[in-house]
Length: 439
Image 1 (cartoon, rainbow, N blue to C red):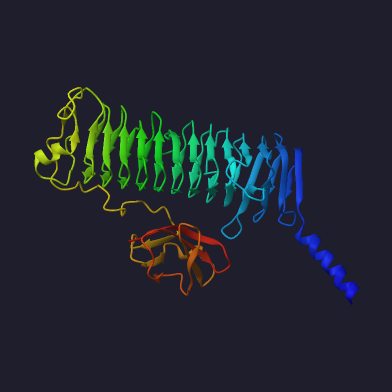
Image 2: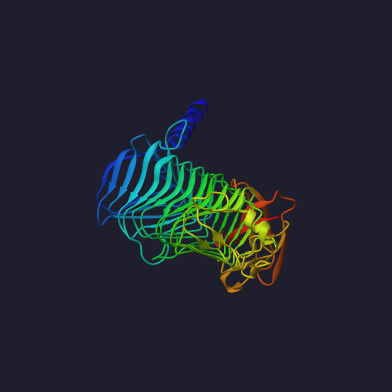
């Protein structure tokens, strides 16, 4: 018996200590399986052109200091709501920049439910992407740069947190339904346009929110509580956003059209050069100035709401030639005495892209309703709802006994902020997910 126990102990040690070391070229179609996980990339691994590397859900890929995964062929990394694919450091005490990351050079790659941590560049894209979003439901945490683009890429429903830079790009892309929190710069060099705008995203508690290039549409976003600037640069349009509690709301260079935003409760609302069209915004209660001119030219910001009805009081919130003779004068007349109807009321105007289910009211006080839009999508008679906080901790889990009609949910008394919900079939398939805001 003692001998048998010794053999069993050896078997257990062998299984729990198992890993697959990988280096060099991949010359034929290859699958990295859960049974072979974790995979340790000890140096450069290259997937050659015409070759597909498939990574199964739940697989962990670890990188040594010089580790680098180069995809010249195709990468299919499809995790799921229960089993993400993990790309991370193999060092005992991991830190951002431990390894070079994953470089993708082609347009046939699919990545869903992947997590990238502790790299120099979590993902480095240099190919063009067409069709359905190739990148969805992924998490980028504690990297120097979460994603670096020299490509046309769509990003959908991803989370970026604790990165030096969340997203850095040098070409047109679209960012939809993402959450970027606690980064240095959330988005650098944004220049969306061809594939779509930056929209329906939450950008909070970063040093800087969005640094943009010469074009791009930013709409229906929450850009709050950033310690420096919420939006800086040139944009085609900035519309329907909540921009509050930042040091500076918008630094707008030449060529921006800015409409229907709430730019309030910042230290400075706007810093403006010239050539901007700024109309029908709520520019209120910014503690230093609502608007600071940065040009010697005169310009107009007529038809905005300042939460004031006296023109002298409004003038006192604008820094222009009245305070510094080298600056031009800012004309704000006529002005509105109430907010434009299309300006977001808190964050109620942020879009919900979830087509399968509807959650309302949102924002709420921790009590809300889940209603299924298409009950035929749910094959079981029951469904499961899960709610997570911003740190990824599950704070609520319950079974819904009906998949038709309204389901009343009460997650109890929670701190105000953004939360995430998932609704799953009883068998584990994802029905829908999205954001909750508790006030």
